[in-house]
Image 1 (cartoon, rainbow, N blue to C red):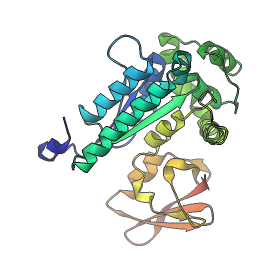
Image 2: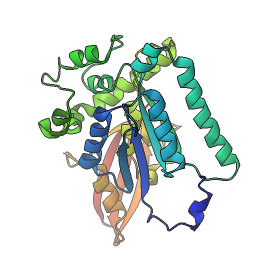
Image 3: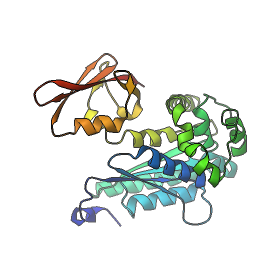
Length: 296
C-alpha cells in the first residue's frame, strides 16, 4: 500500500505519529514512559514490538517497514540490539535488509508517494548501553547484555531487567534516568563519533539518543532556520538550557506562550545564545528567555 491515498483521507488535525519498534519489552517500556513523562506536543508516540515471537533484528526492521508503509507513520525508529547481529555473524544480511527498505522508500518517493522518515538506531550490545551513557562515557566492549547491565548497576544499584522494575521503581525507567539525560546525549554523540572514526562492526555504538532527542524537540520548528556562530542551528543536535529569572522552564511552556494569540515573538541570536522575547500587543515585554546553545 502506498501513501498516495492520504490525499483523500481526513486531516489528522496536524497530529504526527512516531512508531518506536524495539527488540524487547525494555525498549517498549522506556519509550512508553518517555511518552507519559514528556507528553510531546503534536506528536503521538507509539512504542511497538514485533508481532511474532521474540524480537530479533530482522523482525524489528520488518515491523518498522510495516509501520512506515502500512500504517503510514510519519516517523519510524527501529531500535536494534547489535549483540544478536554480532552473535549470528549476520552483518551483511543486516545491512542488506536496511538497504532494501531504504531503496523501497526511494522508489516510493520517485513515484510521487508521501513516505515518512525511517531511522535505524543501534546499540552495542543492547539498550542498557544507552542507560549507562547517562552516567559515564565508555568504549568498553561488553561481551553481552548481562555484562552491560552489571556495569550499569555501579550507578543504578537496584537495576533489574524486569517489567515490574522498569515500569514502577522510581517512577519508571525513563524518570529514573531523566536527571542525567543531557550527559547521555553528550556521551552518546561522542561514542557515535568515535565509532565512525574507528570503524569496525563490533565497535561499541549507541544512537538511541537520536530518537529521544527527536521526540523531545518535536514542535520546535518555529526556531529552525536560525544560525549560531555562522552555522545553521540544528535543534535536534543541540543541548540547551532554558532560564527565566533563574528558573528552568520546559519547551512546551515556551511554545504555548509564543503561540498565544495575544502575544508577539521575536528571536535574536548573539554568539552562542538564542534570546526569545515575547511581547504583549502594547509592545511591553512580558517574558524573555535565553537559550544557551552548543552546536555539535
